[in-house]
Image (cartoon, rainbow, N blue to C red; front, side, top):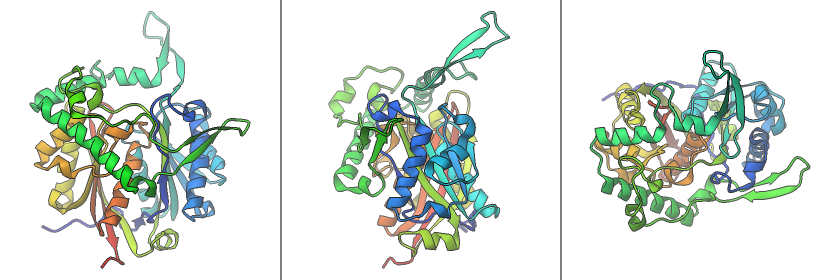
Length: 403
């Protein structure tokens, strides 16, 4: 079958011009104490410095965040100033799809000729998210207090149900087996700790210091705090919160940032740590499933993407996803007839957490790094978002120096 031409033929991701913070769990690190937008901008500057990429080459900045932060009104220009670069930019959000959508938007910016070097910076802090007061004129109670993170996790306005309920509903629809879900979750933890012990995570994750407003040291973010080894016996002993969903088979709220560059072909060679590596964005798709069936939406998006590109699952060198529930992967494996043991071989958000905005950006960085280690190939990235949305994209890594 003929493979479709790249959707963004002129856009490239320079190899190595990327990095992510670790993702400490909710309220476990100094990130709970600071302005996450300011931290993200300063962290991007630090990461690009480590990667020997001068921020002076940046022409535009796309940021992605989903949780309100102080000074969010000023969005990308403010964050760029914290990075030390006075450039224009744009802010976007689409729940947990944000980290991938920001990369796609950057590719469109390059493809359209607007800018040749676009920075992507995604971040979020679930810890100490703000509580706001909203004037509600349609109800007897004229003001409503809004807790942005927990209100939205617990209530889908389209269905009135919590996110955990959609996982249980999808598990029942697809007749998922609790035993398989527990085994998958346990295996995902094993994959993460194997990647950590091998040193793989050190290739993409950057330890970062956190300072307060006076510039005093608050702490160092150098691990995915809150992630602990888990056994199959302990998973099986957990009570079901909904069908096939336990505390151990769902992700946890966390904080963090992740960044990469999208450029033209010539700029990619100049900024890449290995110019012979060519990274393209082939295509992306989105799908909505029926209400409250979010865990099956990514599988539908991937099916659409494969049909659109002419590729198959056998063509994929790396398969990695955003999986807030272990049942997501069980459903995907069943719908695509794919062995879930071959996915997420270096870890995944189910284990290392869910700060929303940067989640899929870190997934992309880890997946591209893994593909380079394997000598190149197609990389499939997918995930779910906001109730019933699935998003998927294919990248191609070509290593001209591989033998």
